Length: 261
Length: 129
Image (cartoon, rainbow over all chains, first blue to last red):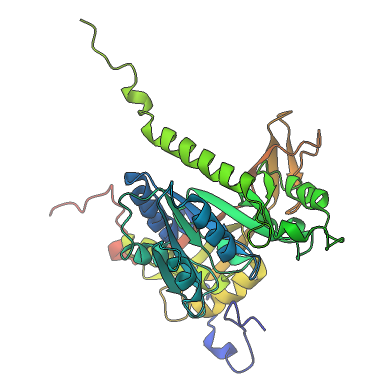
């Protein structure tokens, strides 16, 4: 067990794990530092890079197969005449998803993590070397399909969007609180299947989300058969406008700085 | 969630602190882990026992303080205890709450062994002879 966290003390290796002897410590240094600070510093650097170019960056997360890439394809088709979009794709293996995105005439960079089950700020930073941001409006970062780990790693994104698929259980927000708590928006994907999947109760899913103390809206989307994307597209446009307005606001210290004659 | 990589990040920070203070060894490392942090205290402790080997903290012990979740309600102002998947206000049942404690993952304190000759805090200069 514990292959994912990498450690097990066994009879074979116990002798390697030294015990703390009765050393007399000379000083205790009080610290107050986030353990993920190294990642957070790079994430902040990424965010500043996005802000220099006025790009709204969105971290798209979900379990595998919930429909992230298909949603992005439908989004590109709907918005590409009005907004310039780019995508960073994250998967353990293959560049299938980046290839799908590029087929729609949109730049996409694929990160293949090998075995890492989430993207981190450093990987995104490296991907940005191959993705000029000048002139872009929207950057989607499609995270590795995983409802656990991606939630904890800041990539420098401005918004987190979590897909909850109608083919999953409507109690997923209760089962994966860390992920759903991180969401600025929850998209109920493959919503066109609700009529067939009688066990999925959207009200129950929304109640589970509210129980996480989140005001994040839950909206429905269908990206393939009978596309229904109005709420999703409206949210994107609204967030882009709000983000750009916030970037244009002068710093409080510079307001009212006119010198009296 | 990645307790081993969290330990590696932890030990990098501990090593920096030890170097900055001229420490020869690390005695005890204290971390605070919130119940909403995505890290399991038990797994973190077990990962630490292996991750510390070969570092300046090779004989250090890890103290993990698990932090319960406390939320503050935007509607009624009350602070109350909460569970990872039920963060509603215990006073009014409202969902417009903010976590004030419980999602931390932080290094809190490091005990250092500093050899006599190097026990010079930054503020104290070695007097000229």
